[in-house]
Length: 458
Image (cartoon, rainbow, N blue to C red; front, side, top):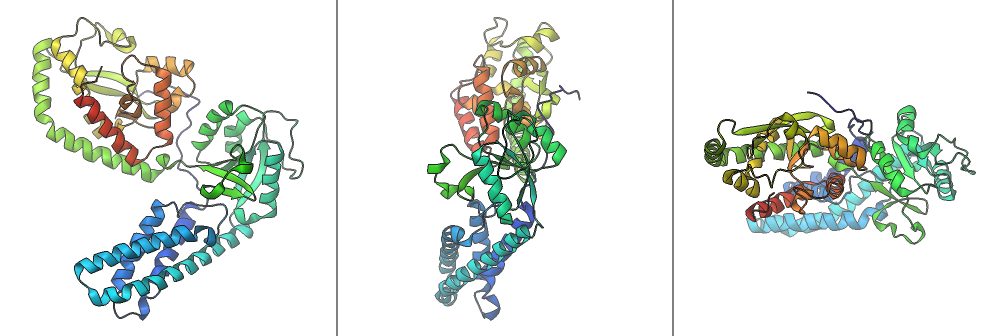
């Protein structure tokens, strides 16, 4: 299987999140043990406490309470922890009442109050352990700072004075070498554009973006390339002096926004792939009668060769053979590879027009999905000729290949099909990848059904 070389697209690496695995495991353990702490002294109600612990952990995960933080404080997290624990207790209590365990229910809420208090205490202990490990240098992540001004200087000074953040600044980058961090004295490591290379050389896995003397537009592709190397990226927001950091992290008195990339984690890929296999298998089974009818109609209208195969570019610029029901037989391979749109071609017969109008011609791509060439939702795959052309002409077009090509996508459900703006398509595709979630996939698939039922295909 051939590939198109693209220096802008480094291989995907699993994110090296700050204390990701140790902290996540530690916090989950203390959450469950804290809520279950009264259990040894009970004659009944242990199962209900265990259920409360499990539901609480699920609510904590949904609320981002297992994400790594720079500044750990149980008082900051207490409102979220308490409200979710109480919600879990009410849920378990309601189930208990429905089942009819009244003796257990009468004591359960008193136990729940005790469990919430013990849980907060256990969280405080866990945070103290993490802060201690950071302060002793057991956890000290090498950090590059982008920016050489006063704000970057304040951040570096704070990180050096307080090691409980777990970050060790090893250098800064900016567009001009005459800038310097006066108070900190960390070395200048080159231009902002050299950030990906510096990450490789220094093995740094954290980037803090303060304010540089270059444009934000020039910085975006550099940060995207850095993210794909598995880095944590923090950005100081504009007008941070009046910024409400209630929903962000902070270094000293300076708020920083962490750029999250759950869409590129192994767990996310596994969930997405599982959905692909289940849905494509079910769809191929249920739609098999329709496949047979369409195949007969295509054969009758245009002769042999019901399935049309075409080379497309997918994940990490790998090529694969995309499958469609034939709607028009090309004159030769050159026409197939380089002609942009055939929706108005007079050679297309009535069957072909119906298939394209209803998007039924795309259904054989369910086989591509089952094989792993494609996914249900993602950027639409393009032919190598156009990928090369658009990559040379459109900024960030190549970044679409960070994810498997999709049967449908965010651009398509927003009307960008057929002969529409490639620039807008690239923007929608990159927005989708940067903000991926399973729920977003569900919404796009629902929008696709609406488009197909309305026969809006081209």
